[in-house]
Image 1: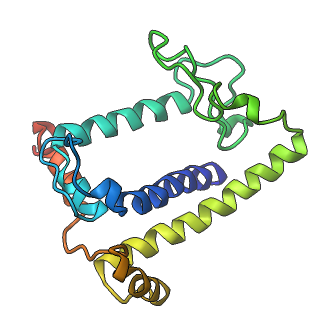
Image 2: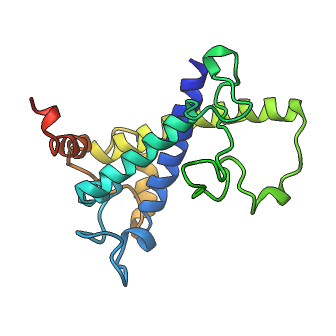
Length: 197
């Protein structure tokens, strides 16, 4: 269960940060070159997801699946012990130069270009860091669902309603979303006959 909590926390931290960044005018506004076919400026993060072509969504899901399979020990990286067999929950094995034909140039947890800035940690510091990550992940889960709730039902999160009213004069804030975020996944799977039989 701890491994699942860590993984969900990491996804929520990325989702919360992604939602905040995608809400900024510099990301959701006009671009010189469209980031993907069908790009529409000035829409909510959920509408941005809706506008991504089906093949683009499929690529994202395949990439996540590849990371997940490697994380679960595909290829048995040296020194890797699965978390159900006594390994460390949340541990992601080194991936630099190991995936496929060596096309991944750096590790995801500590890329080589930032490694000099982080000193070697003691075991106590690593244990504290893992606990901090779990707590941050829990908060990010609450934060992400608060943003999604407020955007789909304005006024449902009083603190965000107040924040939204303060940011609105600056062109920022939480824009309402009246679509169905899950419909995008259904559209991906409807492309394959095996799911419709």
